[in-house]
Length: 378
Image 1 (spheres, rainbow, N blue to C red):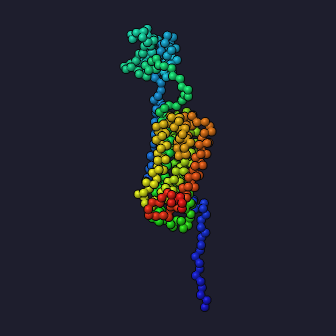
Image 2: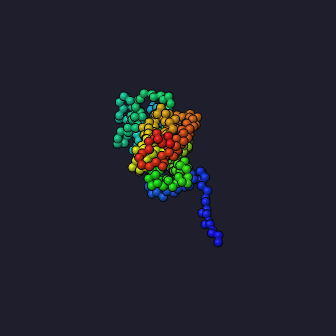
Image 3: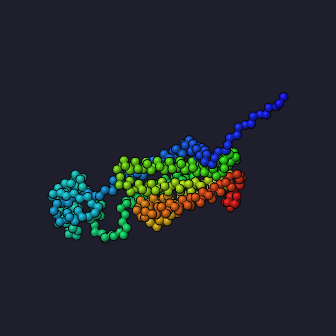
């Protein structure tokens, strides 16, 4: 009797590189979307952006010019009407001008120095107010030296500050949130030795690419949602002029963020692979954290400094914040974003190659922290 050989277990072909990358990316995205902390932080970031849009609209509405009334045909009427920063209403008589003050239509009436009880001849104007001196009107009428700007800006300084704060905060929060997620995932897989099982099926580079891709897609989706929310907020609040000037900057911010985040994500994964304990993540990723924090603080404190923004726009890790700010301020030539983007892409490609080498050479080394020089050697 011939013995029958047991049927061989079916063998499945190893997944291709692209399949492996996508499987890891799907796993990263599903884990993140189930995290309450991620959903709450995203909601807070959305509210912060919406609040900045609303506050910007309120600031723009509160900065209206003070209203004054003048007497038609008086000696000071034409002079006051020529002064910038005043909303001038013409009244047929002195009594009518003062009546506009009493009923709150205007903040003050500007009369000639020879009119009214306050005439002294020291000034060509007499300001008539209701119950307190109108400081804004007095300052507008005061004699001041002529100021000539070689490169005048039509942007409100407070609006510029809020735009800089928005760009810096969105970049900072997204990079920190998803970068630390990648670092924690890498160390967790090393600490639990899950990575040994994963590497028996897929390559280390596919694992790294999947982690970067999954978190990058989530980060890009978050940035796109914020950009759409900001645009809707500007439209609803009637800030169409600001939307017109800010729109190109938002588009370029999204483009630069795509490559800038991939650069930072690769660095987070590579540095995290050097350690095997969650407690050691902070020590190895602190240099990358600094690369994220520096652009945030620079754009907050130097949002109107042409030299600092110019340098930031060509440094790869700060270009996603510096170049959009220069485009919003109108200080960048049309070709500068293209040159800056090329520099960012080239540096990102180099960092990916270097980071994947560090990641692959450190992933299976457990115990003591792997030295960077040993990780580069392999």
